[in-house]
Image (cartoon, rainbow, N blue to C red):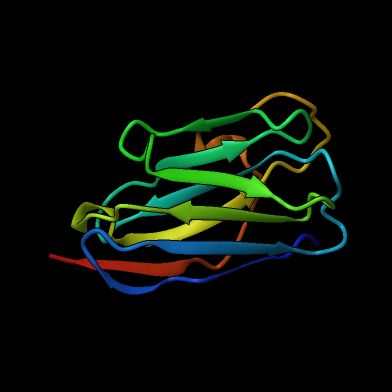
Length: 127
């Protein structure tokens, strides 16, 4: 069973930065695509960022493009989300996710394409 554990969330003010981490179990291998989604209370999950299993291809949701950066470590079992210039509308629970199959250069931007999810980490941005 794949296990994903997010960390790094917190309460910050407008303009601040946070770096989220997602640690994956050893069964999550290199070349599995990973992504970040966020969900505010009473709202649907929103795509934030994704990275391919290989080649380093990335994609971002429109609302975070230019402010957030997704990356992964050399082992491809930890994914990060660097969030800069945070705004109150970024307030949400942030979830990392992984596609449970081997891919190389493809990125995925919808929740239904992902197979495993972390427990989420809260990000709150005050105005």
